[in-house]
Length: 583
Image (cartoon, rainbow, N blue to C red; front, side):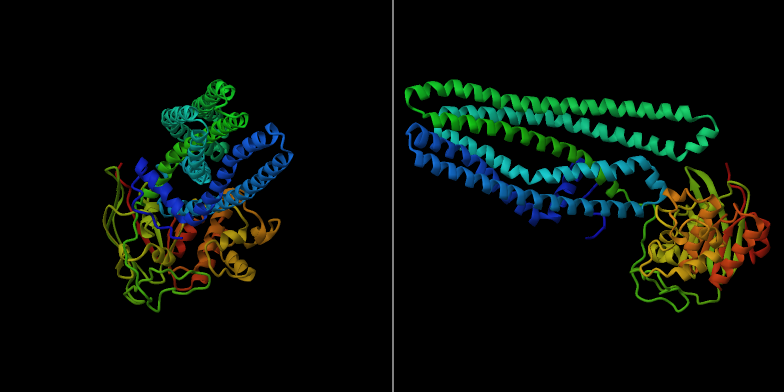
């Protein structure tokens, strides 16, 4: 299925939420329709049981006809077997459809999150994003499971009312009053529960942010003696979640209690009204028993309907939060059209690198600048972060960017790979303005190793081959680790290439994480490699090995590195000095 954002999900409004829910159902509508049909048969089988009980009592027990008792008992057993089969098959289809929908929704949401730049994603908070991709998606799954129940619940209510009307019209009026009271209760409590569920989801997101900060910064805050402040912040957010959870529980409990009490009251009134009819001979004993059974069934159906409607209220709130993310676009958009083919000098089909659909023809040949900046300026909130900067880097050059702290060196590298957009000026790659190159293609050609790279949970090999359609074998992985001067350290780990790196690579040191990330970038053999202070955490001898390995591995590719280290500056073919940003 496509992972392109649907333009109809216009933000986190209730309308967008309902459209998202309808769109979810449409993806598996055949299975959902089949499940609804089967569960409707199940409901009709249940509704018919009191009729069989009535006939068994009136035609069998009251008339002392043993054959009638056996005959209707067999009908009851057969009806029960039919109910079991249809319920089992319907619930199986319902679960499978829900699982497929939620798998798709998580894949879609995750794929969209990967398109967001760090600044846009940070506006939500990591914990909040995790809550939306887990708790909110789970609420939608629960709602999908209940959607197939709505047809058979409504049909069941209607069939019970008709059956009671045929049995004794005054009692049917009692049933209608019961249904009206339950529906009115659902409207009132549904609105309350929906609002409380939204507040609970928001509180859970805020607590998840605090938990993420507490876990991620545990070592730092302990070293500064500030752990108690973070623990108090966590307790405050947890107390907020508890208050909102209790509010949801109170609303749900009140809803269920009232919805259950109304039908039971109707049963009591119905039995009181039906007893004189039995005494007068206008209703049979079996008929009164059937009425009591139907009213108990009405109680269960009304209660289940209330639960399903409450789940829908929660699902709408969850879908609104998810739709808000799907509607949020990245600050950096891929505006280039798709083109077929590349020039001979571009790395069009290197081993393991996926050939993207937005392939472009880049001009300029081998001569001339590979990267050129003209009047490049980046501002944030009116404050200059970088520039204006002008430079050209020729093909095969090792260029080093230097400058004081806060001069915008890291920002410059992010602009070159379009993780940040310039406020003014232009940046060209082999003659094309960066916006003319699709993002996928640009990031295949120009690869950034950031100052704080991210490793995913898994092994060293998993991280090296992440995203490669045709991953290389162990020999090439060891070769690239040798080029990054980290092979000996990896092989010293239990398992070597198969050693787990932990969440975020926390089993490795900072220097090891950077060099593994460097090896991952080298494996893709980019045309331009951007290094953000990658060697700052290693000794000079290791740094020399890293620089020599990068040049040997990439050959005549262009390297642009941010660094003040003497060993890096000695190897520089070109130094790009940028000044301090204002402010």
